[in-house]
Image 1: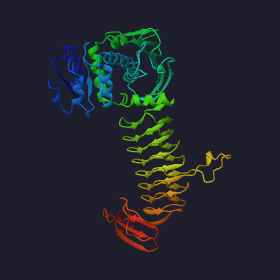
Image 2: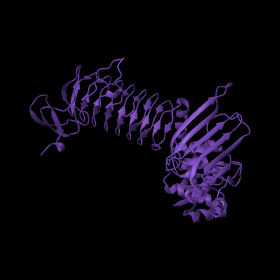
Image 3: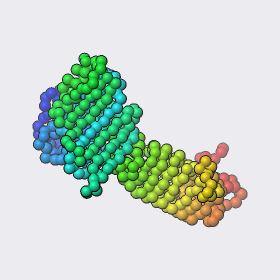
Image 4: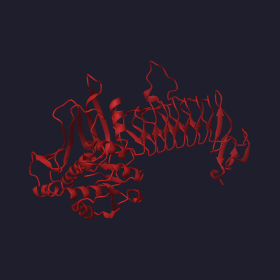
Length: 476
């Protein structure tokens, strides 16, 4: 694994040696614009890090910021920009937190203090305004325990004078089941930034002002003193290098998502815990309300004012438009497109490549009454692969829409729809046949047998009565 060292001034020799010992192959590259695509780690001690970010955009590189205190850029701003591009940026404060987390990881790896029980963090910045949480604490905990965030719940209290957030409490759970809490405040004194890691035989405390990322120990009980010495007295460069190597070898599995701030905002604004077991390229607009466990596939995008009720599974590459409601127990396949103002109720199953037009309607109870509860009587409606439902159509529950069927705008579906059938009207009737590409097929609607090809894509079909198949699928 290559580590590229760029900028006018080389890093300390001890750090270069530690990087090499950890497993990195070191390459000196003075010109940041010529960094190769395989660059995974870049150390730029004095170079303007915004230039490095631009050079590495889209490559997923880890960027190590200056170890000097006279940086000409704001660390928090650069770190936020880097995270949005899928990078990790570590300036002086981030480096100290990273090294401290590496020391804790050593304690965990050797079980020096027994099993981990939990963790907590506190960040009090009197008079501070801006983002009402301290992301570095969440990152530090995931770095230390080598486990990704699974859930994140944020609750807040507003300031009585300016109405902005005064304090927030975060409760999180890692993928390994360990839970942690974090407090952010702009009204408490004194100013401090600390983190505690609680083990069976002692507590470890980190304070951000410690220049060498030292940890202090409390309430020790039968601790492994040699293991403590191995974890706590190792040079900063050694911890730093081995932690980075572990991060890069893991494929960023335990690094927080670049969407973490967005998830936290949704959790804070809507009071709903966010479940973060989804890929980094998932987009969820901050106005989306989420309640319950979500499993969301890569590349899915969920837009303004939608509401998701878990448990819920959404496949990869899906798009949910504005004001979409998806209820508990619904399963959405891959590449499902749901346009604005659609509610997908419990009991509805949408297979891969389904398209739901704007303001179309599903139902899930056949005989609804306001005064009669039928929550246990939801009727399944299945929309098979590739089916299209036009705008303002209504699907009466309990029916199946066959694969690649096409329901016209405004239709009212009151019975099963055959595969490839084109239906419209009230009630909807079979009026023709549609190709997988959406073009109308030159097939009649009767009991006869015939073959035809799509005029647009050339796909061949065979029909026997109201049963149509693509020729490759037909029985021999």
